Image (tube, rainbow, N blue to C red; front, side, top):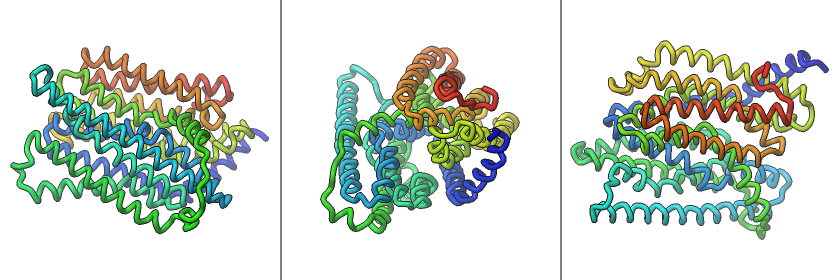
Length: 448
């Protein structure tokens, strides 16, 4: 069968997939707008440096969450649906118990590490050996990592049970809305003067904690209504070695553009001289990430189809990828034009000083545009059995971003961070493109 024949059939198939997932797609878009609104509110509420501090907390949570879960989010999506479908309740019970025990151990390690780092920093400041005040926001927010990771873990468990709308909501717009509501109420319950300067940062961290606890409570409530009763009654069976190995190997799939963006803002805090640049860069990330939202949603819907074809029919797989890229490129191109022509105006909504970040916004938008065209390389490598290669490539890209940031940020500040992140995205995407062509003989860019 020729490629053109597949293209006609697959266009109808993928269009139907989007129709079936229309509500989830709308929830994903709503989640982005809720996050955008939250950042807009915080940027106008705080000075750029304080907004940068809170943005660091958000990015720290995104960056550390995969390690706090040790890749069990993806392994849960892999194993649990199969166990439930085959009525293997002892294995399902064992997996859930193993997963939460592992999470509890890692959480204790994270809390202990955070407590040690905070104690050492306060001690060093107390005896005058080091001034680490600018990093206190990171040290004070370590205890939020297990809470945020638990939200993701519980949402994933809901997703494996078929509660897709709830899972998408709790990880997206419901969480952002709850944070926005908590911050608004908190600042109006207490006097604004009490929540000023240094204490404002601490109070906002507390608002995050309250919001996370509310979302966790709602997730637990719905899970208790959703989980099969047999889970609690059967004697659990464990395959700990198999589950752990799979989870760790799949960890590399987490180390994508979100993790890179989170790491870049942390590196800007570390290497940058002007701490207000962190807040400016956070606004750049929020605006430019609009290009990735729809692309990642497309991948999420179509990845099961890619998984089923990767070992069967390469011509059919090529047809699916060509259509998927078309679905990504059309809205991404429109958004890129919006950023080019109206980017400075969008930045001005965050504050007058944010307008100077327009060159960094353009650089990062170009990097994201290139990256989203090659994002299908990650599931292709994973589903074709090259997960270890993908993990190694993730480590290489992290080394690359640290090196380029160390060189570019001290010299070019905000623009240096944008250049570093864009170069890393281009470098990582090109590496994966090379290996997809080498091992699978698949074109990701229609002609390459």
